[in-house]
Image (cartoon, rainbow, N blue to C red):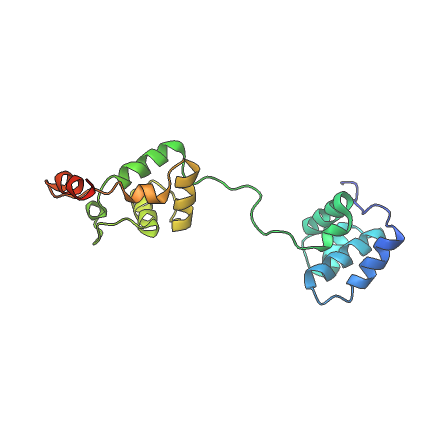
Length: 172
């Protein structure tokens, strides 16, 4: 059996702040205060979790965070994941670039202009991505590899044999 984890000894200021938080309308702050105060009474994480109807690992996480940061544990932090797994490897980015150099019509789409969401659909259907991702995920991935979306849209070419001649006469 693991050694029970408890919060460190509370200062009088911390005790007052935690007791005040028990009357808070913010449910996050209230729950955190209940956990810290119960741990200060030497209740185990499993018992606190059972009483409050949460997971015992959640209680342990709160206790560890309180021991590290003090009353900052009462403030809700960002819900953004701490680590983001990359959907596209460098090899898959090359395949994504190859797709961008082709017309969406080659992939059965009724448009000749790429959009982020369209590229996300095609990357999934062509097995470049294991799952359907958002257009924003595509934009972030391209940016991570130094490709701006504006630049990617300019890679579009036309099936018209005189495309380059027409394009150069317009830009010249």
